Length: 337
Ligand code: TXA
Ligand code: MG
Image (cartoon, rainbow, N blue to C red):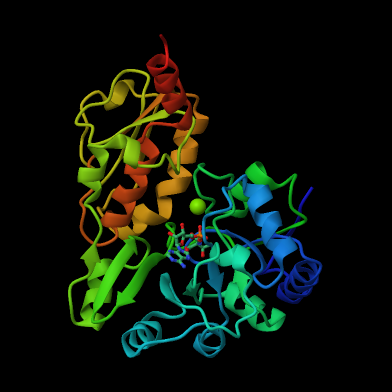
């Protein structure tokens, strides 16, 4: 079972135990401002393999490499002027930059999935201090089983992965609540690869140009086979609900009255005052609470798509996407002769 150390109670013990476990090649749960990460030495292939095994994650996915600061990041990645301006504006913080990997970087190809680029971010708070003390970048996806809801508290991590990892560092609930925003500078353009905890318009303000977006999520949802199930609770997820069915869970937003709410099994409001940052911080915890109530379906009220709403809606659409088992069912039927 994992040892849990409260970093507020004993920061020094947390730093020492974490550095020792990382040096021994273990993957440990590390708090960041976005979500809890499952962190391991990005230069150690055995340690990175532990991340993939612990999460049950496919190995072709590149991992974000976390740095103590911009100076450390510059040892591993090549910064163009625009990427450096974004790093200076938003680090430490919920922004990941995809950059060319320097040939001399010791980051292992298992962390980059063999790409010649690397996703880099400098997290806020204790994680930055830990990386500085450890002295090497940490690869860290969210600390949860692959495909499940991301962990935003030490208790979430313990329930999911506590039997598989030696150490969980507890810094309380993650303040941002959704993963970092990922961008890549391409010539004089900036592409949004994943909406996240830094609103796109803040990046656009510093970059001085609109972000290039991939296919709009609403278009992707029309081709559900293209949209991987992720962030998925046990219950099915119903989006943009104007009414809740008896026995469903309701996750509302902005204090709006929803028809049928009195007959819902459980009613949670992501932010009664309609604050999207508060909604993002509550999102994964409320999904877990609704799921734990034992319902078979969770209805979500519409969430505005501006600011952090873009990241919230991205995660909700993945949570609502057909599950791997649904796909298997369909292909079974398809192959019947
Ligand atoms: O907030 C976060 O970003 C959290 C916390 C723990 O820091 N971390 C996180 O890491 O979400 P991870 O490893 O799950 O993110 C992996 C994603 C990939 O699926 C891909 O979208 C992108 O980061 N990525 C990483 N390296 C990339 C690369 N070289 N090129 C393109 N995308 C990359
Ligand atoms: Mg994840």
